[in-house]
Length: 126
Length: 174
Image 1 (tube, one colour):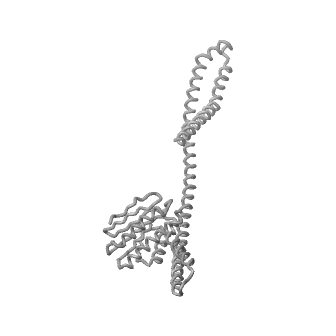
Image 2: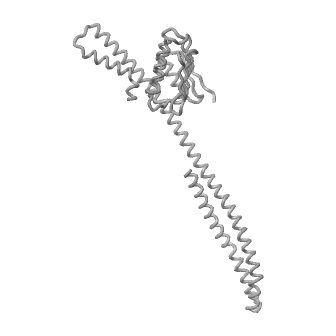
């Protein structure tokens, strides 16, 4: 399966999914004009990936800010990861936030609670 | 369209339930299964709404904090800019003051030379070497030095400000 990559912009996050290593990275700012257009290919890739994914999958999420509709899509990404966990894969979400960004840290904790996935919430040093 | 697509799955579930309602007959087990499905979807929707609202409010708060920090930085920047402009004005005034002083000094020296070389002999001839007229003339020149310096100073300051304004307009146009 091919890797999935979208370069980040001022409005959209960088997406770098490596099919062979199982490292799925989402980073930057997510305020796309059309969230469906941006995230739908991401979800489609994840749907196909669940059948061929390696045993260990690590999702590295490092977001600075995202809008309400992106928050729903992040939830959708986590749901797909939860599906992989339920299929017997080893899934870990690494949630990164800036050291002084309390809001993003708490947001990671909320996603951890609602998704039921193993989370590692990590403060990034400046 | 985009917002509808975000809820694609939820809309599909709703459509399925609507189609089920259009049927003429239902068995008890079918009703139970459909109701179970609707309850599950409803529960999932409530969970989503709760989490999305919570996160959205929190990120709005983050945005407000960032805006407040930006406003505070803008106020500080405006204050620093004002101080900088004041300093530039003071420096310009001091520089022009020195220039005006030099111009007036050269002008006074020139007047003194003209007075000694050309006007004094005329006075001597016309007024039979009247001491008081010569002294009065020199006193007049001396009295005019200060207002002359002020005039030159103000004129040069006006010119300097006009030049600064023109430069600022050019920068804005760029």
